[in-house]
Length: 32
Image (cartoon, rainbow, N blue to C red):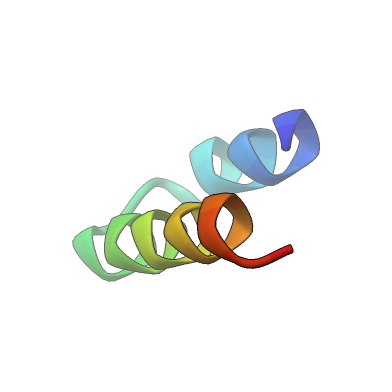
């Protein structure tokens, strides 16, 4: 999770990327 967040910050956290992160976290919490 930490690595993913760092990647997000490195890429500049565009709005699209933020939306993707939210979806990813939701799936992570709900499913895996």
